[in-house]
Length: 506
Image (tube, rainbow, N blue to C red; front, side):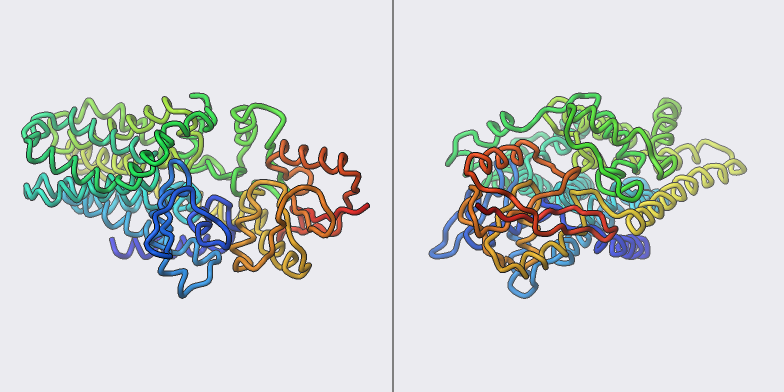
């Protein structure tokens, strides 16, 4: 398992420096920028402690990175390396959990499937969701609950719910997989679950969960119901869009187009139709091949489930199915939850366990002479995963990345510093990335209103993300009587102009 974890970490390091930083990756750094106030903070003397970064995202990651900021300048390695290390811990903790319930062989194959899964690897390397800590949180909860079931030690129960509370404060979306896990336990392990519903245990769980989630509670007291009210401005996504994203997450191809360009100079459609339709146009063609065999094997596992009754692994398989399906069903019910791979990946690592445990259970009921067939099926899954990772790596080197992760931001930061002018950013996703890349050494314009002597930075035609914001600025320019002149274009490593820099004059 250590060898698999090291190999997984090495693969992450290959991908880590390739893409430019995405704006959501640096959310946890923004409270430390000059002149930036967190959404909600606590104060200890002159020290400001960021508590909430957004209405539904807490400052846990900021707390964890704060000591590093004192010795390490922010950059692509600073942003991503700790998240990669978290994902290695996720592998190891989940491997230990599976070993405790299903044996060493099943644990090793589960970890092998997870370590080679493109969706798991890439959403941890580029932790824009952010999900690395959420995945670690859910496997820690499972591990601690299993230890509690084995030993009866209430400290494990308390620790599990404390981790769950902290994870929910970090991102409220954690409630979906955690609620699904508790629901699956209540259904599948009903007798054991009911036996542990003592006043002492319930009190311990409630108190520890409340302690972990207390920063989120304090925020919602200070700003009544802000987290729930956030649903009013979060866009909604259709069930069809979410189902498409789940399928693409499972077969590993969700990040093609969206992150990795499928061919040189590819521009994905960002406007002109409802987002579900745009997303469907992204995924109509794929150059990654068939993707991972995971969805096919999950379907096989589902049909095989009734024939595995009576085996020790049956209830664990049933639990994994209910927990994974339950988490996704909860996403279907809530606004845009499940509309991106950074959401749908939260059903992991359930699918990998389901496949590994199904093959192990079938092996118990088949003649020894047929077991090489099961091994071949497992090898086929791993090979399909590795092939997909190789294709992603080749796309990254040959075609580059979409506008969200463009590697042109590094050159843009150098150009902006050389201009020595106040800067205003006209489109989403540029400002905070440039502040990180420049060590927060740029001078921001006091206002984004049109005026002379300010360098205006936007995405070039075909890469504009927020068309409404750009159109609004153009109207203001016309009303001001000034004229806009482009002074520079900044290209990515594939020589595709991504950023346009302009000045205003009379």
